[in-house]
Structures are given as C-alpha cells and as structure tokens.
Length: 214
Image (cartoon, rainbow, N blue to C red):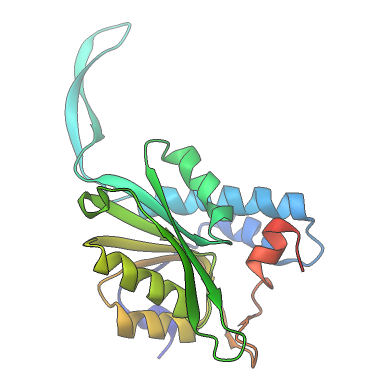
C-alpha cells in the first residue's frame, strides 16, 4: 500500500515548499543555505499543521472602528524537537508560533539494529495540557518518531501531531501501526529505504547537513 494511502498523512504539495525542498535535497547546497531552507520549509509546515486550530472572537479596536475579530483559542502549543536534527526545524516553527513552549527528546540510532536509543528527555511541566507538535526532519524507519511518541504518551500527552520534511513508505507504515491516532504532515514521501536505513532519494543525514558534521 502506498504511504499516502494511510489515513492521517498529509503531503504538503505547495509549489513553493516543493521548490525549496528540491534545493534542500541537493548535495551542492551549502550548510548555511541548507539551514535557511529547512527553517523556511518548517515555517510552511507550521502554517499547514496548525490549520485546524480553534478560534474565538475578541473585541478589537482599529484606527477606524471596534469589531469582533478571531484569535486562536483552546489548547496551548508545545514544540518537541527530536535531537539533534529536529532543532533545524525548531527555529522556523518558533518564528510562526512564538508563544509555543519547547521540549526536547534526545535519541540516536543504533548503527547495528537501527533502533532508537534515548539519552535526553525534557518537557514543560504542563505538557499534558498542550497540543504537542513533534519535529523530526526524516521519517526513515520510524523508530525515533515512534519512541518519542511512546514517551510523550507515557507523560500524559493526548494531543499529538508529527511534522517531517521527508518520509519513507516504511516509516509511514511503522508509524501508522504503532500510533494510528497521530497525524503526519510531510513535504514528500520518497521511494524506499536503502540497506543502511537511509531514505532514497532523500537528502542524506539531516543532522550532519544542518550542523556541518560528517
């Protein structure tokens, strides 16, 4: 079954986002441009992923008159970055959502098993009261995202969304099997994973390209 046939998967096909994603993929893109592009695409994803936030009217006085105008209501937001690559998306999200709290989950991928190993976990005290958007640029095997969502649910979070730049069909299937209630917003669903667990065609290692490490 194609990944986009799973429920709760939104592929953001906006031409501007797809244009920037193409340059993010290119091996010729420099570290500084890669960071800037990831930040810009994260802003676009933030716009789409918050489209269903509830609003309420408040009284606003303009230079002309007073009228009722909509503002966001309901649950407050928390952005949870899966370290370290998630931090590349975090700044762009905060640009659009400056009032959101921030949490971090540190995970690394065991090179032999490809399983996610946790080394850091820090969330706001009132995390249970917030809508949580998890940031992970690459949904490859899905192990890191699933581990992060497991921990967030264990911490009492009931409202969760996942934002990624690129996903593999294998990762989408794994996410759906483990957390069918968690919707995914993603820039593209690529062809497959290679033997090393990297997305093809993908963009390489997001963390290495954001921070200039190899």
